[in-house]
Image (tube, rainbow, N blue to C red):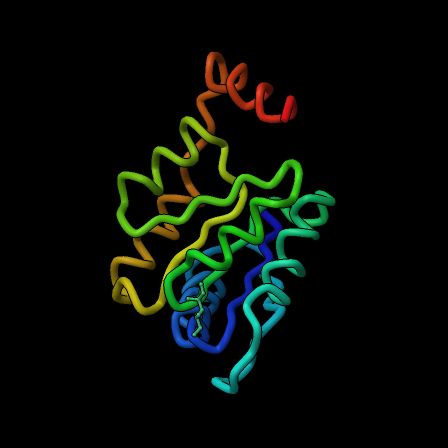
Length: 144
Ligand code: RB5
């Protein structure tokens, strides 16, 4: 898969861990759009960059990380056809794929540890959408 990943300063550490994990353990193509250090950086700028490219279908999946994950998810979900899921446990990482066909995973660096985050990331990437009645429900998103 083609994956785009980004964070603000608060998510920089976990973003780096995720990028290295993906590069060393998978064959996915990863585009890291920053940030590249811990200097303060406004999270909406990275959320727009990642969500815009996922919405345009330039990438199959996106990964966004900030302090809580909340700001990134709010911005990303403003894009039509983006379904960003804020996940801090493995169950929701699985369900956001099975039932919601989430195309962006959001996590909070200040909320969970690296070990759990990497398991969430792995689950998000390997779980397929179930389709069927869940697709019918996704189709209803476009009516608002
Ligand atoms: C940055 O301090 C913090 O507000 C940001 O990373 C994020 O948590 C916003 O939702």
